[in-house]
Length: 148
Ligand SMILES: [Zn+2]
Image (tube, rainbow, N blue to C red; front, side, top):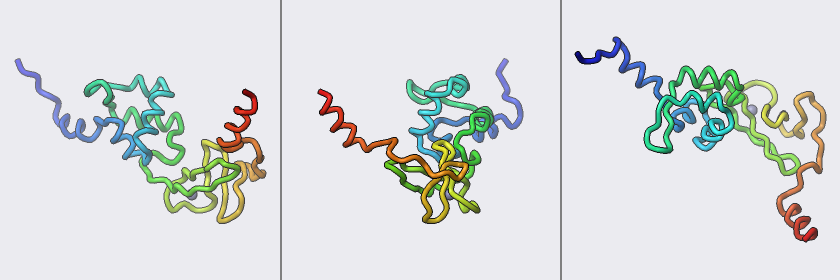
């Protein structure tokens, strides 16, 4: 007796079986970002259905999409391209994660900052960001050398 897949199974598999690069494409992030999510969130790693070779996990997209939404990843709506506007403050680069062509201020929820136009970035409650909390790497290196 041969196995007969249910009607529509081929189409469903083509649509929903995804590897990391496809998850990256559908969420508008890099493949490296997806690998990082999988490494950080056990709940995502547990969604791996099978492996293609040693390095290519395969997922079922509806499960991944639901789990990403639960985790708030990426902070923009899953599947929508995000704004990506950047603002640097005190050596930290903020990247707007709101949807493309959004209204109002740019928001980086992960780093808890927002900004409008050319105004300085603030925290999400509109308070000025602290400065001097994150010295450049070169200053770290000089301090390190002084300690030795
Ligand atoms: Zn924006």
